[in-house]
Length: 338
Image (tube, rainbow, N blue to C red; front, side, top):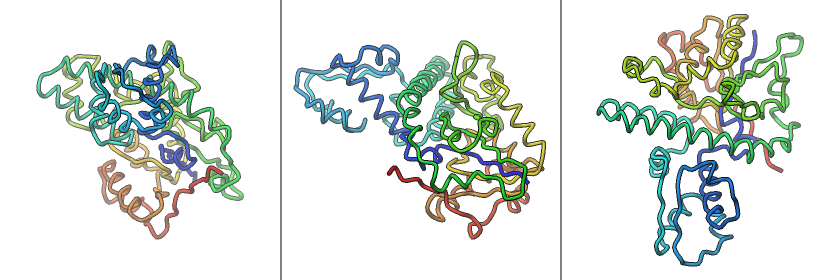
């Protein structure tokens, strides 16, 4: 039986990489502010999601640039003649909301799309579509320039080094289905053992259809059919299915799933609805014999993951046989930075 590992953002976080939603927004607000002091020439021009107009009150730069984005906003509101203008309405919505996971952002986008379409506010829906595209492009550059350079320093002589090795005597190599955009997985196995199903920031060329995939992937939702029937192609631009058609990664994954029985390991993936169509295919496949959750720290995370996974199953009886109980599960390793 082959071991297949589904890697989510928690895998990168276990390596202490700054890949959370908050890390991304902190960096973006700091760089936008940095640009206002003429310390950077290109960032705001390339990523024009918001504009900051600062008053004449003196700011202690060093302190401000070390704040997180919520503290920066709070500090700016205390200035005379300040102004925060969001060019990207979806970014404004995210900043004002309490969501802090990428899967939440993808679902928030989809729910807003539903809201605007159901209220016949198509123009607003299209602005949200473009807003998510702009955030994706900014995220791509953030990961490429701020996160990827730190991956080389990751130590691999700790728990994960034995995690992805084939069992003794087995010739079947494990397969890593990488839902992240980073190259962390390549620290442990060869590239041919990794399917970066949502792309890799090191291998992007939008002009050739090579880009990271970011959006919604739940075509089983009733609203999706309504979206298709509107005959407005732009409203489907952030559907993950169309991103899968740009490379052979999805077809390669299907071929691997069809080739042999497998045990599915969940490492750092929320298993949320934004990947429902894809995860349903993996979990409900006849070759999938077991689903092993490598939980974060305690039982509560395992319990929540089982609830999320259940939404990907039509056959709940099969689900009960496939999910490995908590008593036989192991936590996800966490690697120290030192």
